[in-house]
Length: 250
Image 1 (cartoon, rainbow, N blue to C red):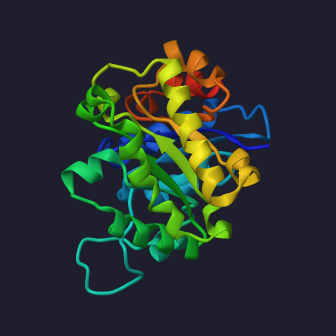
Image 2 (image 1 turned 180 degrees about the vertical axis):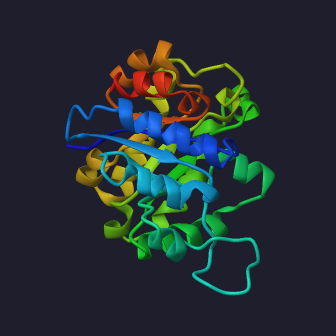
């Protein structure tokens, strides 16, 4: 049975003390209800070691927002998967739409990041999704199929470490949300593509998260859909009450 997951992406928010306060609040209020459900937080790099300590006696998992394509070297300002592993990171975003748009990350770069992560025992949370123009012109299946090609570069064993997150770019930070039916349509398509590449059993065991303005008011409807296995949460992850309300909707 595939896991139900809610992952909170803090993005570039919270100074050091704010990150400590948020993680303390989350740990104090989180009640793990089911072994098949997971809660993950993805703080900025400056928080990772301190948040790892706060989470050490909880059932909350630690992730990072990015890693470099190489394991070590003269890459000033970058952080490798090997470094993330050394501080207890178990998950890492790959290909978030903001990094694709603002840092021009392409499929070749994302393949290298995925391989670095799985070789360092970190599970990639691979993001894919279409722009508004792709949705408007009906080309969104082709866009997502092209993005998923990154994952086909992995072996079946390595792919089984991957979580997929569908994030319709037109619904991130806009207050717009894909309808539950729209989300289900894309999640089902992604699962079918995984089945075509790695077989139906692997596809059925892959968690696919929705990542487009998910909030307490729409989480139940979204998560009720058979191929929506949870959420990649942005703004609501900065509020403990809202974040846990989304988790409790699983």
